[in-house]
Length: 389
Image (cartoon, rainbow, N blue to C red; front, side, top):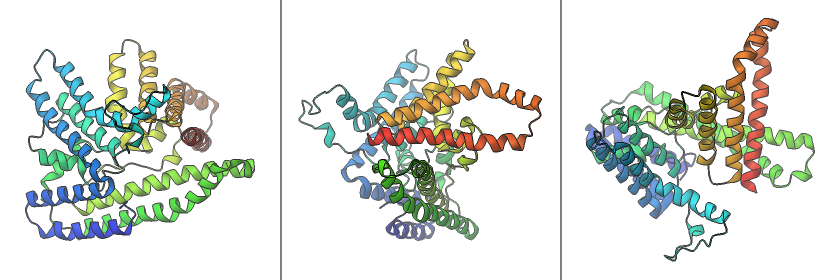
């Protein structure tokens, strides 16, 4: 039951009706938690135990972090909890491909074939949400949540668990009182968002998918012109599919009185790669910015240029491998890291040069937008070819 499935729309409508017949926030939380676990079980069946495990680690780990915050070994303790939290993600998403690279026998001593393990739906999303929560508790940005049901709903909320956005505790958890009354204006706005998402997903992405698959499965049968536009179609397919799915999730949450963060803001109109990543998959790029880029940059502040380059490169490698354990994903991250490093070190000088030349800013933007789009196309192409290979 994906978000574009008519069964999901019926499921959402049923939850919506019951939600607003309940007056108590506690009863509403119980309803949404039950609905979320039902939805996730429909997607992953017995892999729901992975979600339970990550939730338990996040909740209990948050309490332990605050309890031992003054300990001399608090940083080591934090690292240990984060390692335990990320263990399911590493095992299910990365261990088998990594062992395959070194030609390791994937049948463990326990008699478990790692290749037979499916990747639990949404594990990257709820694992990063849980990790962000632990980081915020450790940094004392948020207080640890003593009620496990709220942590569980934060991580399992059904519109966003399968494909994001990656929510932050300080953004979603305060809304879990769920005491907002029904609002006709809010519901109409939510429905418009859902409909727009469905149009993008069903009438654009799903229509582009066969053409994209045909060109990439047998590129030799097509001219260079058609191959190029197949790459363009692939970019618009990715955008329409993911952004459409996200809009359905955002609208679904809004119907139930919850505001989740946006994930796309017309990324193909970006004039630089850094701007592109402020508009594309925003919840992931901002998560990596805050929890990967910023700490590395801070730790290397004595080396401004080297620290910036290292932080950018590490951040985009994380972005790449977050998508999966394939060479294509790694190359995707490496290329965007390279683009961003070049942009960071040359943009100011380029702006000064064009200002001296007297080139009008609208003309400069009109030139930079297609160049940025082309660079993004090349990274997408490497990702697609590397994943298929």
